[in-house]
Structures are given as C-alpha cells and as structure tokens.
Image (tube, rainbow, N blue to C red; front, side, top):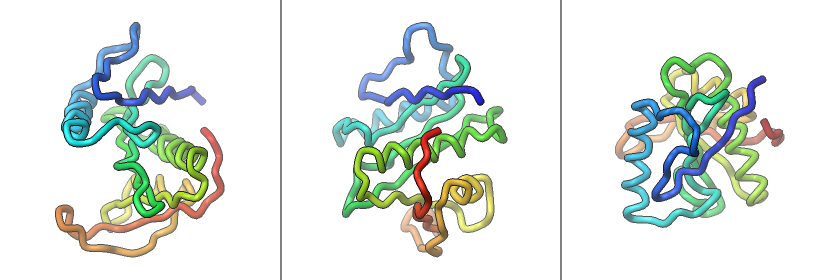
Length: 154
C-alpha cells in the first residue's frame, strides 16, 4: 500500500518544495479555505489537508470546524481520476484517528446524500453507523453518520 502524506492547509499554504503542481480541484479547495480563514483562525489539527501519494496530489480531507459541543464533522474528496483506489477510505480513517488521538472524548460524524454512494461505503468501512436523515437548510435531505468503530491508523 502506498503511503499518503497529509499536508495541513495553512492560511498562506503553498505546496511543499519539489511536489507536483496542484490539479484544478485542489485550487478550488484552497479558495474555499481562503474564505474560511478570512473569518476564522487556523486551529490545528482541526483544519483541512491536501493529500499526496507517490508524488501526486490525490485528494483533500478536513474537519469542517473545531469540535463544537464535543462533536466534529469530517469531509473528504478524492480528486477525479483517483477514485476506486481506497484513498477516500484512508482519508476518513486518518481523520478519525487524528480526531480521537487529539481529543479522545470527541464524537466524529459526517453527512452524506441519503442514497447509497461511494461516501456511504467509505463511512461504513470505517465504523460509522447511520443515525438517520435530516433536513439541512442549504443541502436539503442528507444522512447523518456517527463513528462507532475502533480506531486504527492508516
């Protein structure tokens, strides 16, 4: 299995020296974080990460905010052309291990679309259980998941 490197997205993030150029999707992610940092501070480990595997940017993952009421939401995105290789599964596992390694009492959760898809399979493989569907003010009907597994670091 190829190792993956998780690079925190800081307020003035630049790719590490010698790393490949960022794909277009990564540029969009950086733009989103620029907006976030305009109104909030960088608070590691509760931030986003660019993920490098075998000298290629393969995805991004994040804690959407620092924990609130002892809960932290995770999100992940595998870049096009990299899907189906277990990258999303490994990013989700890494986020869970990072969250619980930093704050063992925190509850890790995620939202997906209500229908079965790659993200629901990723969460299922990582020990998340479906809590039910909720109406989100911006996204409509979404499914809430909560981590109930055993932490392993990937």
